[in-house]
Structures are given as structure tokens and as C-alpha cells.
Length: 87
Image (tube, rainbow, N blue to C red; front, side, top):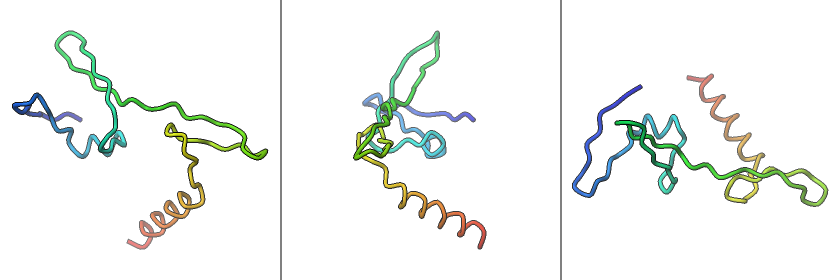
């Protein structure tokens, strides 16, 4: 997958939506930039996830440190699957 971009007067580029979706990038996400030869490399900066016990139960925390609401997440995924089956 490739695409051509244009640098604006302030040195900015817009990452096309299909790339943002594929890499799960959202507004405010941080990217690491590097160069190899004549190539520019962008890499998402992903915070480390953690696993810890809370009240005797193992709890997974996203990089932000906030617990994931697994019930809501599972329900959302179920609804998406049901929607896909209906279509």
C-alpha cells in the first residue's frame, strides 16, 4: 500500500485515512520519526500496557493507565458482528 503526500508551507503532511485506520491512529497520537537513507520512517508510539491485581483480580490496563471496560467492548464487538451478518 502506498500513496503520495504533499508537504504544506509549515512542513506538515496528512496521513491518509486508510493508513490511519489500518494502524489504529487517532488525533493526538504520537509518532516517532526517523530516516534511513532517503526514506522517512514514521512509527506509532504505543504506551506499554500493564497487568496488575486489583482487589485480588488481575486487571489489564491500557497504556493510559485506565482500565478497559471489557463488558462494553465485548457488547460493541457483538453488535458489529450481528450487523455484519444482517447485511
